[in-house]
Length: 140
Image (cartoon, rainbow, N blue to C red; front, side):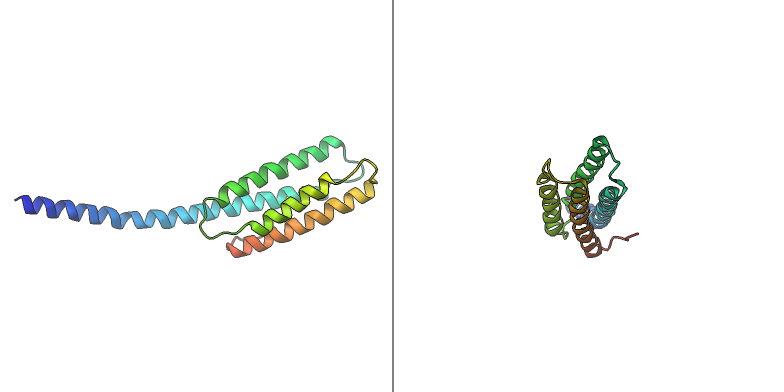
């Protein structure tokens, strides 16, 4: 009788372990979807730079910067949940973008500022596309 109880216990544990395998696959799929969504939102935030013009206010520029910063935080957070994603190149592009903006002095002309920011944003957008394709994110 005791042997039957032990066998039943082992059988229940084996069945429970077998059911758990699907959870990790679905968790990875959910993590990938969340990452792709955050990457898309980040790309859109960086694209918001294109909406800025010589008539944009400092508040407009700060709002775009805040959106980019928040979206980047989401990308980093969601990337941490994936096993096989490398955002090093993208992270480097974001760092270069931040440095380019920080390097703008008060004597820089508005035309030069627009050129600097748009050029840096293009590099970031290219890096986003590379990461998105490596994770099989659909790109719009």
